[in-house]
Length: 141
Image (cartoon, rainbow, N blue to C red; front, side):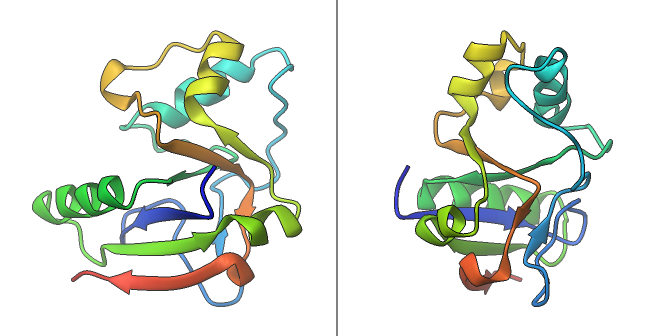
């Protein structure tokens, strides 16, 4: 994983940035272990774009270009408050945040996701991204 990852979010995102907590997953107390029975279903639910059921994950990308592309897509869809957070991965590790590489996790658990959701640049942060790890938030509206 690179030194910096990006989180694209907007007014409709389940996990939005706030100064006190950073980012908190929709289900911040949700148990997850890639070896647990049912792990693949949690991943599948998270990776289904239309899903509004809370999961213990927060998606990030290590590609600035992908982040800009996703932000543009959201604006084109009429979403408000579109922003890109720049996150320090060393600070994530120091804070004890577990980060999974999405494509590797999908393969290891046998999860099935829509090919349009497949992205080698995506990572899944478990439960939270503390505000100390957020270097900057760029508002693009």
